[in-house]
Image (cartoon, rainbow, N blue to C red; front, side, top):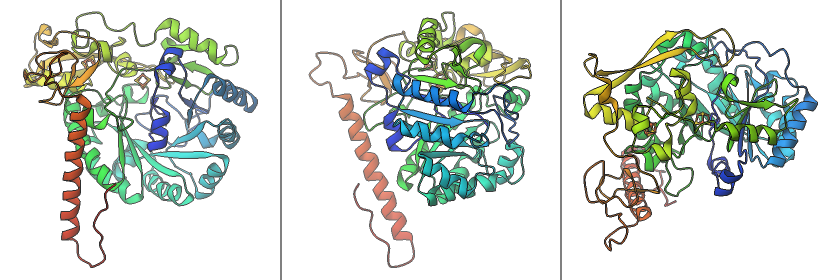
Length: 495
Ligand code: SF4
Ligand code: SF4
């Protein structure tokens, strides 16, 4: 099992730990580290990017792991997520977790949960693990099929109950692909019933086993249906105590962005990949990468047996993991949001065509193309080698919605690239750059240009929208309660 940099989603406390301050960004503090402590795994996932199964030949010793924790603590890390393979297949995993907790770093674990017994969970809690995210990729038959082991779904659901009962905040991580996208509402119902408190969703990305099984990958134009569905579930989740967290691979902007991307109650939007800057990934052999999902062939900053964490951060900064992105003619390269977004998740774009900063799995890109009767699809043109984090090769083809080929020149953004602070259009509530006189999306007078006395504050607009959401949410809840049988129901109290 594998995970992305943000794979182990979080409840409120961890989410706020991950908020990057200006100082974090300036000093490249590795705020969140995702650490594959072993490549051993007891599942056989058809989408596994790291091709986990057997442990690596040269995994770090306990003493070497303890030293890595000490260095990360000194570098300012606030959160470490242990992954695998399956992290608890390493005999000393609780020692490592306890050392992380001893340094005051929030320790989470991401797991497929096959064999994650209540006893193991209780020991993890005693060692200082404070969050466990369980992978649930579909209802029973689909999950077992994707994970390659019969019974793995039921074990995952049981683990969520056990995690909650032991006193750790239970979360769920779901891979979204062409098979699971249709089950998202049912997965939502199932994990709410099991007691999950947060739900991190992310795309199955074309790497490792997922290249072999490329038929399961979403086509880029399907991101519109996926995001519209997820945004609806995000609002339902707020009613039911489940926080839906869109992963970094779920791109970007459009009408849902102000509501669901924020890590805090403040207005917030996607602001680009943090690989190698405030995010780090570690492989079990000590390879230090800008992000756990990226292949070491292009994105390693060193190896912990010979390179310190500080040195690796400097190496990664010198290589500007995300910034040497797309400069050619592409939608991202011409995109209105380029200077904020830089083509979204480096991992998603790199594994397709070997380019950083050109990402077809983007809501803004897909919806803009759809308005012109266009869409994009990916076609595999080369297999991935049989090694961890292996990358194949795909072509991204532009076509008309009826499947006929479209001229490439139609695939560019027709709005001018801008830079600066993003604010909300008062009319369509999409992000626009401060100072726009007319919204480039809906054409309305934006009310955000400097000096305009009628300009409303964008935070005020979001607060108003949130207040309306709250009123609607309570209204729905009151109607639900009114429709329930029984005499003991209480009216919802204001939060
Ligand atoms: S089209 Fe590319 S640059 Fe523009 S918002 Fe989407 S991912 Fe970012
Ligand atoms: S490549 Fe960047 S955006 Fe993508 S998962 Fe890694 S850190 Fe996040």
